[in-house]
Length: 240
Ligand code: BTN
Image 1 (spheres, rainbow, N blue to C red):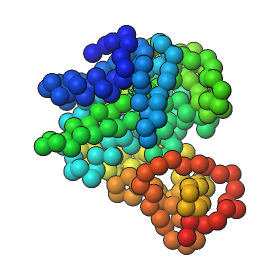
Image 2 (image 1 turned 90 degrees about the vertical axis):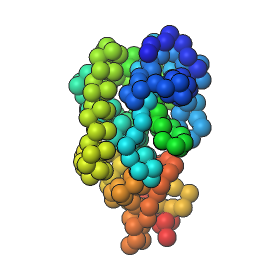
Image 3 (image 1 turned 180 degrees about the horizontal axis):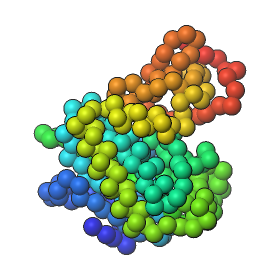
Image 4 (image 1 turned 90 degrees about the horizontal axis):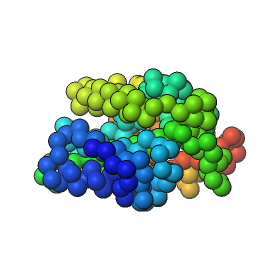
């Protein structure tokens, strides 16, 4: 379903799902007045500059594996950006899509665990923006900036949905292994020194539930949620 303006495509998708909307229902808007980002943050984009989409997913997955849908979505976004946008994007854990270290797309997975779990996968891709305000300028980019032109948003959506349907099906049928292999191949995070409040370490892999594995001081630690700051050096205190 297409809208000019909504508060959040996530909210609309959940409402439609509550009213019985089928698995795979897609909500797209030109502008959001209250776009939602991860960890309670806002997601803002000027009207008409972004692909703003939410997909209703009624998953066939154990509840503990639901977060893996966001990794499957990240892989799908990266593939769609190559096919429709002609740009090679990389993945930053947990589910940012970046080009040259700047974020070009974000993914928000929201779930409701009633009798049957319901998920909405939200994707925001910076398509046509030519500049970003304030501190965002150093952290964000768009397809127009990277490729010199903005691809058609419908073509991008088609590629995204095609790739997401395929990767989701593989996740549900074959488990995490194929998605993990593809995510690792596209990863910008693995091999980097990362820092969190607990200290620093080197990202070395993904655990079976999508947690980031970080080696520090001879031990491997799991990071299950949160944001990473990548460091050029490794001269901060170790995690353990
Ligand atoms: C992030 O914080 O990186 C995730 C951002 C997700 C934004 C998208 S835009 C379409 C959908 N609707 C929302 O309100 N949020 C997601």
